[in-house]
Length: 252
Image (cartoon, rainbow, N blue to C red; front, side, top):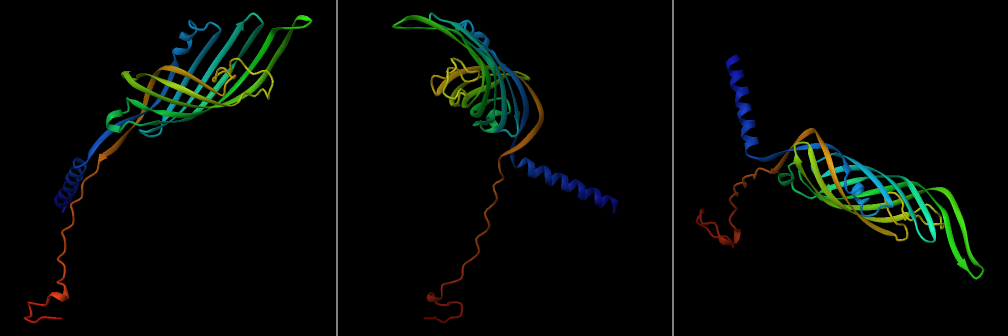
C-alpha cells in the first residue's frame, strides 16, 4: 500500500514536469528602483542661472507596469538690464510607466516605454528690482516674495537598461503641459520648479537617470501557451436526400 502511494506521488510529479516543459516560460524579476538625474547638475554649465536636482523612485507591479514618483528641487536667479528675479521651490511627480517590450526581451533589465505623470510645484518668487521708462523718465519698483502652487502634466517617453547587476542607466524626454501656474493672472514665474518657463503652456526637457535596482520578487511568465490538439471530427450523418444504401432502399 505504501509503495503504491509513492508510485502515485512520483507519477504526479512527472506529469506536472511534463506540463511545465511543454510551455515556454521566462522568469522576470520585479524591482524597486531609486535614482538621480545627472543631467540637471550638468545643465548648470549651460545655464548658470538655474540650479536643479532631481531624484526618482519606482515600484514595478508587473513586467509592464510601474508606478514612478519624483522630487525636483530648483533655484533660479537672474539679473538683467531692466530687472532682477529669483524663484525656488520643490516639485513632485507621480504616475504610471508602461514598458512596451515583451518579457522575453525586457527580462526585467530593459525598458522602452512611456510614463504619464501628474506634477505639483510649491514655489516662491520675487522681483527685487524692476525698471521701466515712460515719458517722465525711468522709475523702478520691487515685488516682494510670494508663494504659489502650480500644476502640470508630463509625458515621458524613454529607454533604460541594466549596465551592471543592480545598476541601471537611461534617459527620457519630458513633454509638459501647464495646467496652472498658481499666480492667478499676476506676475508669471520665469522658472517654475518641475515645469520651467511659464510664459508658454508647453515645455520640454531631458533627464538622464542612474538608478539602483533592488529585485523584490521574480515572476514566472508563460509566453507560449500549450497548443491544444484539435478534437477528432465526428462522422456526419448521411443526408436523407441521398438515399439509404445500407438498407437497399431509396428515400425521396
